[in-house]
Length: 355
Image (cartoon, rainbow, N blue to C red; front, top):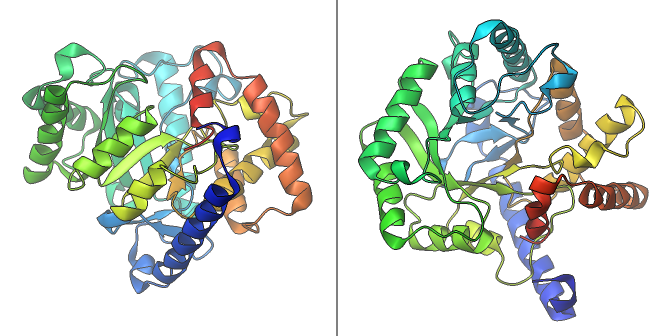
């Protein structure tokens, strides 16, 4: 749906749905179990991760380190293979420092979604596994490649990743599914769902879900397989908006699904026009505050390159949730720059301006 297809009636309906969700959010926020969550910090906000019942920080740690060149010297290891070598040791030290600072400020969930990330965050959590919830995937060993589409193969790949990370269970096992426009066959979907169910039955994971860049396909999965789709990951940027009708969030609310938003800063495009670090930090906080104003979004998961970036996200959570008129105008202008500055290989993010 494009902007011109949204009628006033649709818009009012969407606002009403958001109001209902906000009321639900305010009630569950009073749940006494929130103080029992991992690394609880009174200065951090926590949100219920849908039917999992987990309470996760309002901002969580995304696994990617694509912007690490500005922090580390030398070549930064890629995401598709285990982290090794001299550059790898520097990265592992950095990841451990970032995880430490996350725990200190109350950020209690990390999403490791590639072979490299699994090999980095496993050691970072050694000796403190119970202080953070761990989300887990194994790109590129995922159903985007034909050899990783059978249930038994997927479970074996999960086991391989757990061994690499040095963990005996993961909190959320989510499968990295197809890119946009290349739908999996029904047989492939059946295999993915079977893998999720098997992994949970065997105690390798507590909860399950998928990540996808295809909104309508993801909505179908939630509606058809609510038992396995407990947590989903999808793009939600500083300029994403909920569709008044046929929104992904309709299915999320109906089936009580936990949601993590990837690419909140548009693959760093939000910062391209910023003048200096202070303005970048401010744009990041405005974006997080904007995203959290949607109560159906459990938490954005930005990749954080340093302890200082962790502190900036903790500050965003503490700032006033609703943007004032000047802040809205500022973020809208930054959002226009974000869309204009998207790298060529991230043009697909425009599909997620309406969710």
